[in-house]
Length: 101
Image (cartoon, rainbow, N blue to C red):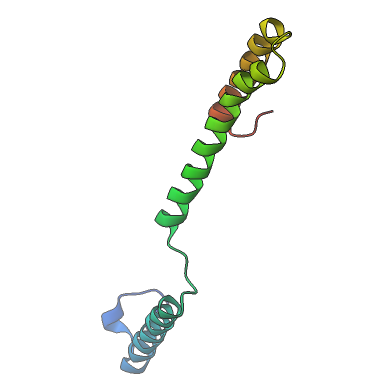
């Protein structure tokens, strides 16, 4: 009886097993070469950069009301609380579902 595809490796002919091994080694060599060339991206590093950008954007948005107060002191009593409320509401929505919709 011929071995079925996906059956135990021990039942596969030596040539098939060796071809799979060689293909896997070639794949690993390509990955190592791409790493050395700088063609692969480190997801953890990119995630950290993204989080830093989001934190900076949040900080800058939360500073808008105080800057409005400096630029428009005569309207600060009405504009600043509204701006704070709207900005915090938008940030809260983004933190809940990520879309802001």
